[in-house]
Image (cartoon, rainbow, N blue to C red; front, side, top):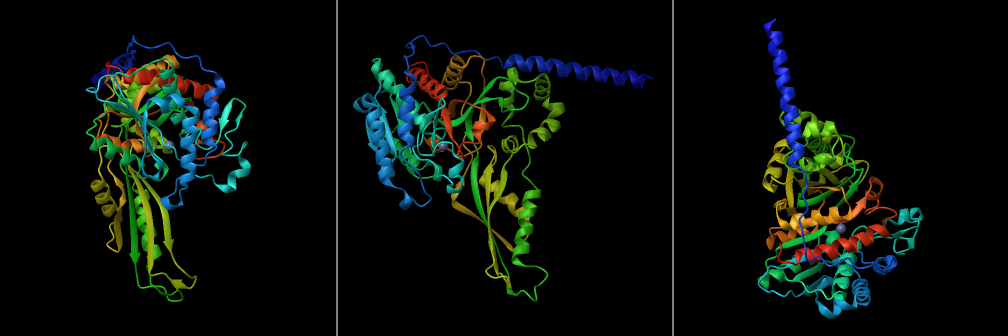
Length: 492
Ligand SMILES: [Zn+2]
């Protein structure tokens, strides 16, 4: 009988701890705005002006290619003309430098040259459109059609909209007679989608000039509406870090020969088994990187989610299993393994002597390229499989930018001003962005795109019927109108 009492007592203690932790957890996450008294009243936006500018930008086919020789410099020059025509004040007051290939760097000098500048960025290039899908587009991908309350076309979400949003905001600020306290840069690469050299060139140039940036904001996660299961309302994730990147080539060589007398093991078989080993032994899951996000999101979470995230000591295993079930949340918890190329064989009756495969890893912050390579070799455990990283396709995860500083709080405050009730949280960017290069000259690098996205919208990025609502576009202009003022002030 005493055992039963002890058990009941233990159960009560656990329930009490879980309840207390849940209450404290939600309290700690309360989000306070960062006051800013110097803010100018918002400009009155004529709804179609920014839309027409974005439409004109979309109509220019600034597609970037793996081989830069295939890029069309005339398209980038045409986009530069669209910007010049759309933003006369920007081009009269800011210095513009065109870098090799077509990347842009604008400088808006601040009153006080001793203050560290801030930098806003968004790339000019877009991904191509799969010609097989052309008939599925409601409006042609480079039409820039303004229909049904949206601007349609490639680049409307990724990410000419952000370039237009920042430019439009600065144009309005100049019209209002605003001068920044600290220098404001606007950088726009021409080859982000092919992991190109535009952004590194901008960084090298600023570094050469001895520039150290107070903060940087690039494209990133959006404000999600009903995308995260178990959360209600708008959730805005501001990416404070991004995953590393590693492409590895696996090669197997064997004797080859006639297919009528195959040996028990063939190149294709050996390599296939190696890949199977990698896939069936995924990198371990960790909640370390995502836990701060779920903590900050807790005010929007269902009771069950709150209890779970406040009590990872007890329920961590269950939470990991639940999050691992969906590819997006799984990717935020571990280094991912993606076989992307497999090549072997020349003829149906010839045993190939060579088989090669390419595996793309996205490295979780906290892990390193060296650790990933070591584990890959360990898991494959077969000396006949050569493991060779591709040096140009390898970089470490980004450092984590702070989420307890004015630069971060200015972003979340403006989000919540424009979208009241939005819950904001720091998170990890799963894809690669140009912003990763800027850690060399700044400790505060953020990736965020201030548009409301539902699950259906996210599929349009790099996909079919990419489009942005006029409301989203105008709010993007207001977001940067406010953020440029805050970030360029002395309140940083
Ligand atoms: Zn992009």
